[in-house]
Length: 238
Image (cartoon, rainbow, N blue to C red):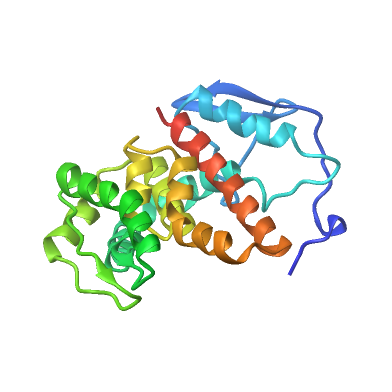
């Protein structure tokens, strides 16, 4: 269901700004600090991220598009949910490894398979060499059991992250359909924009063959916007 402008809360402030606070940085609206939905202080790890979130609030028009404020939503999750759900989130990342997009090669045509491997194999090899996450590729949609050691390695990588990076990484898993791409972004191996394009190799090939309708094009652009926000998030963490 699409939210109409009348359903969105009206803008009630003139200016958002990044300000230092004990333990980090926050965002203020006309001098008043933002709170999370759980009424916690919006304490952010860097000035850069605080400025990016302040810009997100300053970019709002007469109505506030809360759904489109990706950085604010990520910050709320990192503060309100992640500290109590780290084990569950690490398990979720491991589950993404079990059905990782980069391990599901097309059965054909050969041109598509070669394109997939050109983009996907380097990421799989990087994850194996740098993170000890060795995943087995298969042809088709049916998943192959992945090594327990690799799944545990993925889980441990997640647990070693701080709350903000873990939040961004799980968000990336859903956006890309791939734990390996999410981890490559979290570790600085790929930009979020590049990872997004790698995640849609199949989609891009299909568009080359059959074209793209306006609805699908709009959906892709919305996801690209999410990838740009994710890049800002990760850069803001240093």
